[in-house]
Amino acid sequence: MKKIALTGIKPTGDLHIGNYFGAIKPALALTAEYDARYFIADYHALNTMKDSRELNSTIRQVAAGWLASGLDPEKVIFYRQSSIPEVFELTTMLMAFTSKGLMNRAHAYKAVVQENNEKGGDPDAGVNMGLFTYPVLMAADIILFDSDVVPVGKDQVQHIEMAQDIAQSINANYGQQILKAPQAAVQESVAVVPGLDGRKMSKSYGNTIPLFAPEKTLRKTIMRIVTNSQAVEEPKDPDTSQIFLLYKLFANAEEQNALAARYRTGGMGWGEAKEELFRVVNRELAPVRERFEAIMADIPALDKILAQGAEKARPIAAATVKRFRKAAGID
Ligand code: ADP
Ligand code: TRP
Image 1: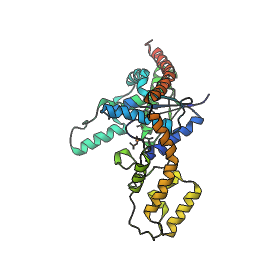
Image 2 (image 1 turned 135 degrees about the horizontal axis):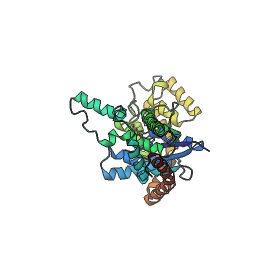
Image 3 (image 1 turned 135 degrees about the vertical axis):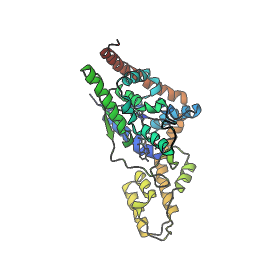
Image 4 (image 1 turned 30 degrees about the horizontal axis):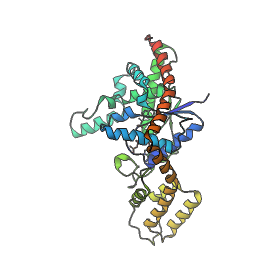
């Protein structure tokens, strides 16, 4: 039997190239070897997104983004977290085994408290219970589907370790293996994709190259990449240029060697390097963008795919909850 890989994608904004190389592509690469269960973590997004129209739209955009990038819903169980009521039933059960102290130590919560303390205000300002208990809902997402591995970025490893702790303490309490303890799968080889200003590409820095921007906007965005004031004739170092770092993600070896040589000889201005970057980015993204637009043009069909995924997911979820309730004496 294949092992199970599961990951959740929070629909908090438009997908960008960092998400594509850092999360989507590596997760899709696992689908050959694992039984994959990938879902849209819409209740997690609700903690921060209170505009209903925006949330409704990002849920579809992120789902369409995964399908356009190659997720095959025949091979991957692909669903919305909010369509699986067992997630919330399991969350309640896990709560009974999760110490408040464990939640106090969660990085995301601690970061908000620290920021509040630095400002000298109420330490819990802006903290809702959804943020505070975020790791329990995430543990339920994972444990419910008997996940072996959870592909995530480094920032999420603590959450997977908490899911492990919670599952193990439940198994220890009942003296039997009721729940599977998951492992994080951090793709060390996936480099941090730089943004327009050279920092990590991130929505929160406003420095992203959106994955599905129309061609004109894509070109304009690439032209906004920050460069130094080196003149056209000066030789340039490809290894310290974010244009070149981005280029490496999209160009083949021959193209990379050719552009690196042009950097080193001089005579090429930044504008020209950006044009060449745009060419290879658009070559890879144009077909993905076309598929994305086609999917977004038929939302009922997209919703049907997600609903069919939920139908496949629910019997697996129900079996886990049943096992746990029986062990707990609530059957
Ligand atoms: P953002 O920083 O834009 O808010 P998220 O935190 O929602 O992005 O990230 C979703 C997924 O995309 C995570 O798995 C994260 O590791 C990956 N990711 C985001 N930005 C990058 C980046 N610049 N380089 C590599 N991976 C990234
Ligand atoms: N917390 C994850 C993030 O911010 C999203 C997520 C929710 C998740 N539930 C999950 C990831 C379960 C992996 C497994 O990126």
